[in-house]
Image 1: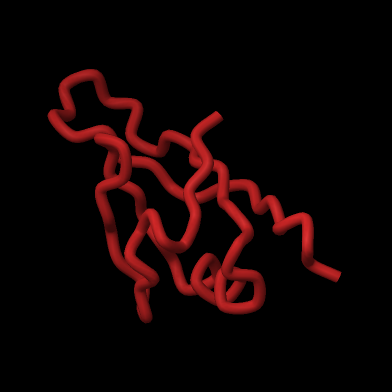
Image 2: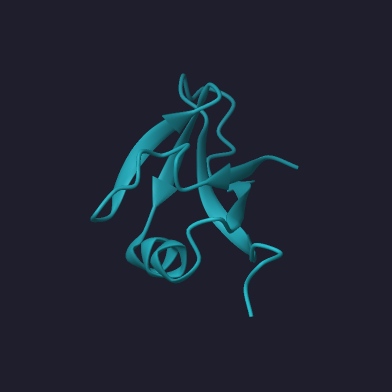
Length: 71
């Protein structure tokens, strides 16, 4: 599992793509909203570009894992 936190992606204010650990991650508004509610939570990544000819591996944030301190 690759887990991505808000600091890993530079705390973006709007949807974007960011490189994290050698992969390109698509960050959508819903991901940012969750992070603003729980900045220590993490998203698990899921591959979205399965084309073997693609030079860049692209991923999206798929499964949310809240921080242990969230109430």
